[in-house]
Length: 249
Ligand code: PXP
Image 1 (cartoon, helix red, strand yellow):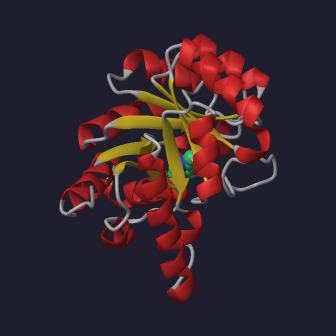
Image 2 (spheres, helix red, strand yellow; image 1 turned 180 degrees about the horizontal axis):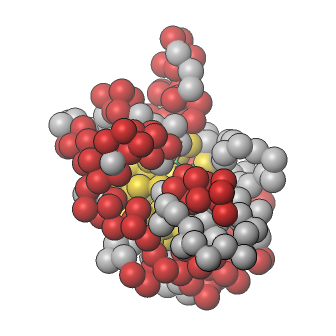
């Protein structure tokens, strides 16, 4: 099981102090490049950055520097817009994850409506694929969205685990079953299956029931843990916890 480490919140911390301050003589900290190196050392298999339309955390230059200097695949999360398409084609990251973006949301809420915008998605997938990127659709674990992602030509889906992660009891169990079913359908349609959002170490034993998962994308809990143990150790803890699990393949 691969671990993609999302380091957006290292940039969140930097922006909390330095956003819009062009006059400072200080090199803004913390450095996202240093964070990416620490994640690499801890065993990350790829680095994820979400360059949001409002540039609230990662900036264009961050993605460029990480892609240039860090010997790991770069996964760029981006909204499905023309301006982001232009940026991505210029950057040519290894992977692209298309996500829905609403300006006022705190984090990515809900998955992409691939079914409702199939032609637009198909065109984006085509153009990004031509630019050499492998594209994944960040979708809720719904069969229609899985099917629409395959129809749009994407080779991968990332199943949104937010509801699973943020519920308890019967609803949590239902959400796990939705993930199981969506993953099974995605695999049947030939899609590579990833999962992400809100995942913590405690969720791993249950996620082991989701078949055909090949990658987890994890950010917030790793960065939170890093405050106390450092980023390399926090990534290593997650990676080792994932290695202790017997994944359903
Ligand atoms: N995957 C996607 C598509 C996301 O948008 C996010 C959050 O930015 C994550 C994974 C990681 O979620 P978390 O930070 O909750 O681990």
